[in-house]
Amino acid sequence: MELSEVLHEDIISLDVKGTTKDEVLHELAQLLLDGGYISDIDQFVKDIYVRESMGITGAGNHVAIPHGKSGAVLQNTIAIGRSDHMVEWESYDDEPVNLFFLFCVSNDKGFEQTHLRLLAQLAGKIGSDALVEKLQHAETPADIISILTAE
Image (cartoon, rainbow, N blue to C red; front, side, top):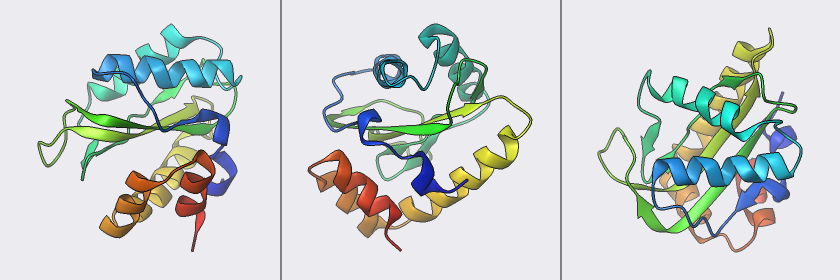
């Protein structure tokens, strides 16, 4: 599965309102529910917190990549959010976050391979300060997808 296959404009918000990690996770999970990607917000968020308890998901450079496997997932995807304010988040550089990539991956047998492949692709992209800067200034969800899928 390629990154380009799981990015969808309907689950990208460039105006995240949440001011805490929990509010952000619920806000992005609501987009996933509304889009038919998950069946249950509470179960999905609970499963995300299971993964959060295992280690830091703040990647640095004001980016967080919360993720986890969940039986509530109907379709593998990544919800993306950006806020105009910083949100406290455990991160490797101890800085707050305003760019969120919420992995939405089924807990089926192919989970590990799908998850690791997508995570590696995304990490390769957001490792570039210039690319993160472009994401921070993207004007539309289509721009976000274009930036992330450009070679």
